[in-house]
Structures are given as C-alpha cells and as structure tokens.
Length: 111
Image 1 (tube, rainbow, N blue to C red):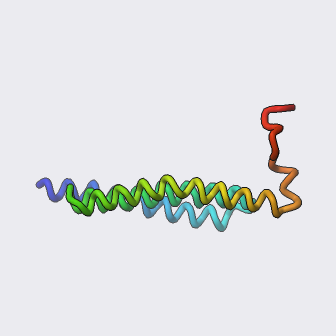
Image 2: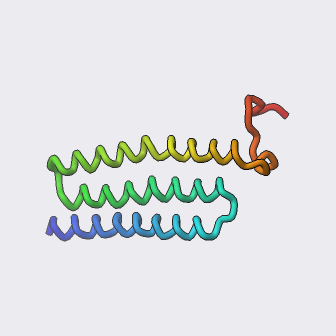
Image 3: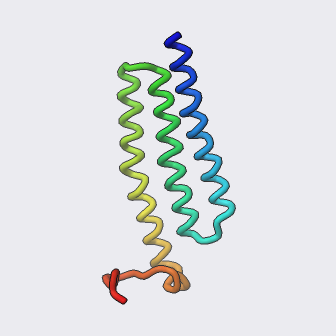
C-alpha cells in the first residue's frame, strides 16, 4: 500500500514538473520581449527541475542518492538566478533600444 502512495505522489509531482517545462517552452515561443522570455525560462527551469528531481527523491526513498539529488536542486536554485541576471545585464548593455523599457544605473526609485 505504501508503494502505491509513493508511486502516485511521485507521478503527480513529476506531472507538475513536466507541465512547467511545457509552459516554459510555450512562453519562450509566445513572448516577444527578451526579458519576458528569460523570466519564463528561469521560472520554468527552477520549478520544473525542482519538481522532477523531487519526484526522483520520493521515488528512490531516503538514501545517499537522495542526498545527491537534493544537492542538485540546491545547486540549480543557487546558480539559475545568477546566470539569468548575467544574461539580462548583457541584454541591457548591448541592446540600444532597451532604454525605453528598463531603468538602469543608480536612479532606481527616483522620479
């Protein structure tokens, strides 16, 4: 009975992760602005990968592999925002038309 409960919990979480990946791809094709695309891919990667790997942790039980998978989630959640921020700064610095949409410099909060 416990195995079936674990199976269904794993299946539901895995489905949520796959759904997040599908919505991420749809957002990448549907959204036109680069920053919106990066937001969709960042959220999709963080949530989708977190759900898929968490489903693998539940499926394997508590062992050393679960610890490795948890460290993988932690690493992804720490590095994904950094890489997204780096890519957005590249876009801000290289796109001459982005000044209409983004405030940069130290004038945040000034009107």
